[in-house]
Length: 322
Length: 214
Image 1 (cartoon, rainbow over the protein chains, first blue to last red):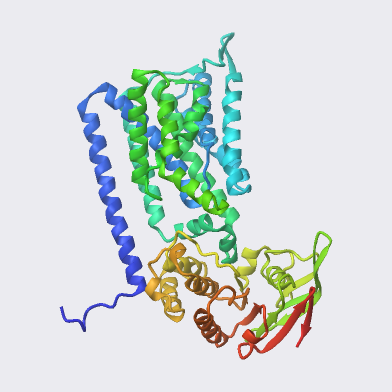
Image 2 (tube, each protein chain N blue to C red):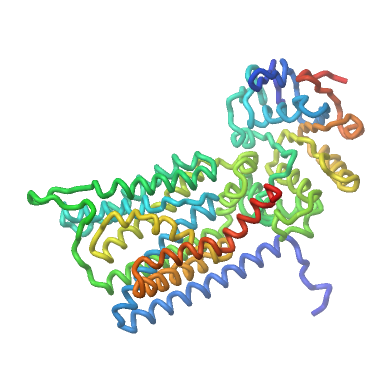
């Protein structure tokens, strides 16, 4: 090629090239995901489809959580609020109205209520946000056994929770996989779009973002809504998968699940977080079959050994000079 | 015109600024120097909206903006470059400038504007570097460049020469000279007056919260 006609490498060209390469990577990941999920349903293996459905629901929760962290710089330990609230609301409305379409209303309502809670909490600084979301989520877990319903003169709910009708596993699988694929596509494309830059700027430095003219309060509201509604839908699907809702929907292990599923993935890698969620669900299930509740040991080990936590420890040592 | 009228600032019992009056016109460069704790940074923070005055008023083109937050002042054309650079750390240099340019222009125009600014501020070679990995001098340049990307009428530079070696300070001086041709009001703070000589139209001294014309 004649060097005189060779195109000049400019900052804009480098930027566009980087975005194009990220788009190609996304297309490959999306296609792989569709192929793998289609292959799983074709196996017809009930247990594999059930476990994959559970992993898909957890992956959706992780992706919703990741949106708040990647775009808002906020680590939430309280995504059980939309998740559990939606599960409970879906069950209660299904029992009271006996109308399947009422779950749609409960997903949106629980998502919006949670978004308002998160928006208010996002006014607290980042470290405080981690603690306060954990406390609010844990409080919901403690309060949930108090939720009782009187149906035909009989009290239901409490520690045992609510049982709802069963829908076919294939249907749940298709809904969960479609939802997770759509979520993955939406969040990935949003992250590659120029509109995400103001969110990322706020994530990196709220004060500098304000100095540039970025209205951070408005962005925090968008982040709360966009993160809570999918988390709420995941909670609703969780209730449908088990045909049962109990205080466990608000449990601490669900609250820390997205964090643990993300610790080994590279920054902002959504596919890495999906893989992390799948590995965690499959290994937890296997460990549980050996010894009940032993998956908690796995969670603890990951938390201690995770690169992210190790990085945080080094960072603290540097600050303290220790 | 950006104006301060009888602005005072008190932190607990300490009076940091005392009845400051200041007019900044577009096209004019003002240098303010003073020792540590004299109130230079507080003055710029009051102008940019990051700190509210205890009493007094701030005006832009006769509009009272005393209660207006920083992000709205940025929209009105007041840009603030922090003393310690605060880049958007996980974004590249290009994205840092592009993000700010996008707030004023459509994507295509913002991209072209970003590229122009990167060349003007000699940052084109590091355009795809993550901002957190830049040297101190490059971070200072990026901080000023990002402020300029907001297309301001008034640019507030908080100690742009602080913590820089001679070579980097020279580069920043060159860039400030370039900015002077852009028809904006510029306020620069520094520890000593010598560094401001030949760079500004007016030099003022601030000491014990009182602003005096040299």
